[in-house]
Image (tube, rainbow, N blue to C red; front, side):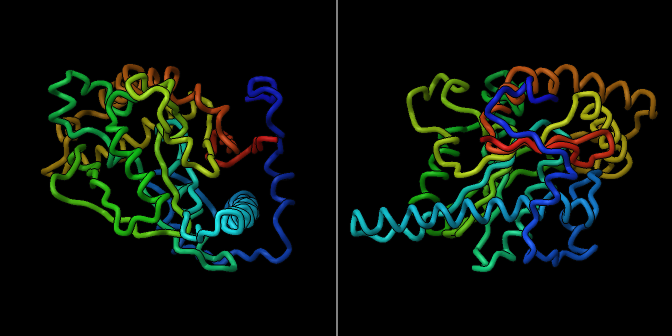
Length: 315
C-alpha cells in the first residue's frame, strides 16, 4: 500500500515513527498472560508490538474521547439536558484472517487503563448474521459475510439503542463451531462508556445496502474507525495456516460445521482452503471490504510477519 493508493486524506507513518507518539506517561500494564488471552486463534503479537503500535493508538483514541466529551458538554449547556451517557463507539474492520479480533481485544484492555477507567464493552457483527436456515432459504449460504447475509436492520436498532443509553441491549450469540446463530442465546450490552464493534462490514454505508438507502447507517454511529490491512497474498497464507490448524483441532469436534474437512490429507486441505478463499473471501474482499478502506479514520498495515509496518492516519 502506498500513500498514492489511499489518496491525500491520509498521513503515512512507519511503525518506527508511530512508536514515538507514545506519551511519556503511558505505561504498558499488559502481561504475557493477558497477551495470550488477547491474541486470536493463529494470530501473532508481542508485548513490544503492543508498546510500539497499540499504546500510541490508545493514547490517540483517548484524546479523541476527551475531545468528544467536551463537545457533549457544549450540547448539555446549549440544550439544558445531560448527554453524558452517550457511549464512544470504536469500529474495527478489515479482511478475513487479518487479525481484527486481536486488535479489538488489545484495545479493550488498553482502554480500561485510561485515567477515567471507562466501562468497555466489545462485540462482533457476527451475531447479526442471518441464521443459516434463512441463508439457505434465500439461497445465499455461499455469500455468508457479504452485505446481503446480515440482518442490518437489527444491527442498526442495536446501535441506536446503545447510543440512546438503553440498558441491557441484547445481541444474538454466534458460534464459530456450529457456524450459526445460537437460537435463544444472547449477550447483553449495558450502557458502556466505550463500545468496540468488530466486523468486516462496519465501514459499509447505505450505498452497500440499497434496501435501506437514505437511512442512518452503521458509520453514522461510529466515533472512530480502524481498518486492519494486509496484502492479499499474506491474508491467503494466514487463512490456509489457520484452516490447517483448525483441521487438527476444532474441525474434529462432533458439532463442528466443518467436520467433513477434518480427515482431509494436508495437500487436499490446502487446496480446499484456497478454493474457499477464492470463491468467497477474495470476492467479498474485492467487492465489499477493501472499497471501504478509505472511509476509516486510521489504517494499520501489516507485513508478512503479522507486524504493523505502516500506519495511515486521516488528516
